Amino acid sequence: MSNNISALRTTLFDTLQAVKSGEMDIDRARAVSDIAQTIINTAKTEIDYAKATGAAVHSSLIETSPDLPRLPGKPVVEATSHGTRTVTTLPNGATVTRHKAS
Image 1 (tube, rainbow, N blue to C red):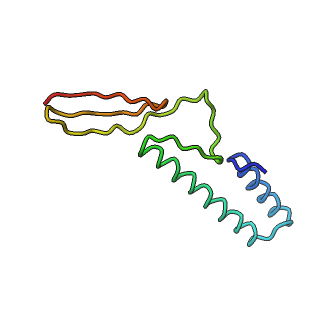
Image 2 (image 1 turned 135 degrees about the horizontal axis):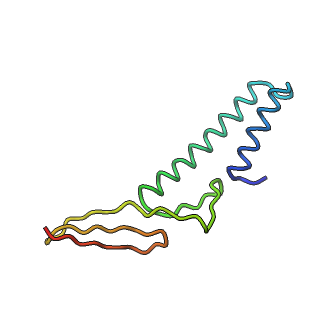
Image 3 (image 1 turned 180 degrees about the vertical axis):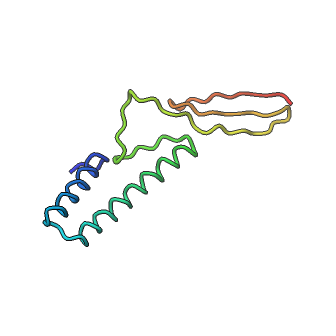
């Protein structure tokens, strides 16, 4: 069994069908749903971490493609003796530093 979003979605739809057909009781289906929600919340936490830090997070749940563009990391602004410095992490791990005089 794959541990990705497609497999989770399939499991949830199979569970729904089993409840509709009477093959699965509602308590068992609720347990499947609760576990699925925990897995989804874990993935959301990974995404929030990646957004906040700009770090690449590799998750077996989230299907990715090298063809999809990645968002840059959150810029970090620091005060310097002559103004400010903004450092942005690019998707490939490189950084762009901008200096602004005050």
